[in-house]
Image (cartoon, rainbow, N blue to C red; front, side):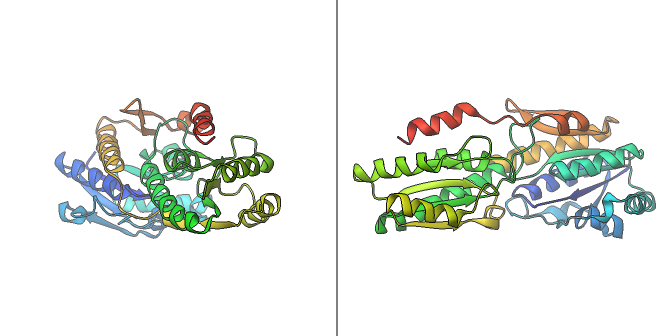
Length: 319
């Protein structure tokens, strides 16, 4: 193992830069040449590759986004695109590849593994939707961003005596809504993993108003229902003025938390060690505060389990 490559793929997540920094510096420490691949698998196909040095990753551990940039590539999913990528890997003499991203990025690494390319995955996604790891890079920062937004929204909501629906990201996973809702003191949390009743939400709002509560926050995971339709329904049933705030891509940005920087650094370093050990077709993760690594196939097939206990706790604390 003399030369490795690193890329970030899919949606960006705070902490990707910390992981990239760890890969580059750990690689150089062990005498490897580290090639940075710009714009994910798209850049791999196009040969957007340059050698990285210690200065390449200076002053990035605290920065959001990804220095390597990212993109989604439909071409890479084709046989022709995969062959192009393999040719580029051969031309640049890359012996192993480290992929930072979510499940789609891991599937790409899996395909490269099938073709004989040693590849290791690092979980980088704010959705926290990978079942094999307790946390993915970027999730902690995202929920802190949402909690900060809730605090700001609550100030104005209290002033006007309103309810506010805050729609957050997560694709098909409700973890951002769940944990940000718990930390932010939301009255109702609507997630895809649990049945939803608008009547129950309205009942809780009315009960709060009757005891003199001046505001209410409702956390809604994206892709479940139309936020504005729900707001109209709540107003009709309760008479409480209800506004909608869709946080959108603000959740992807910002300086990563200390927690995200730490796990990203640990995962980045471990991924290089795995390549040096001759390992392939594996992904790193976090279980019980320890860095683990398992087969990509196992990681992709591991069901994401919703934390029912935390969800029940939010219902108790929001009475």
